Image 1 (cartoon, rainbow, N blue to C red):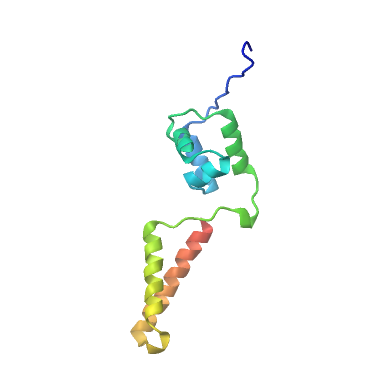
Image 2: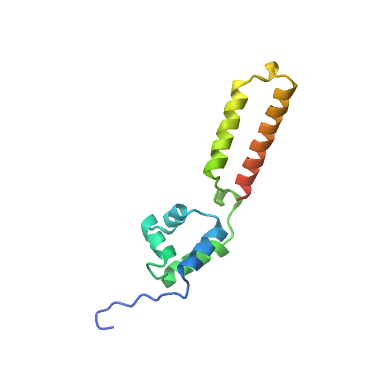
Length: 127
């Protein structure tokens, strides 16, 4: 070591491997970068393959995948934009129509809306 520095050891992981491990954890790129203490842009460089994945990053991600998380620490799932819009639309519809004024059709629609919201919320908690 002539200058006192050690070379960074690169792992055998590719950006695709990093992406697959992030999917196992269930985090967004932004959340993953924040958790690893790096910028979102830098994390994207790793996942896209523009920057080789180094060994310390690989080990940190492996630890995240393999370490058991407490239930309250598990990352929350995400909803698509469509699902978010659908929940908001359903909630607006429920708020606009008081249940005492609904006819039989309105009550069925309300029940379907509540069921759909429940299903979307269940999907969110499982992801």
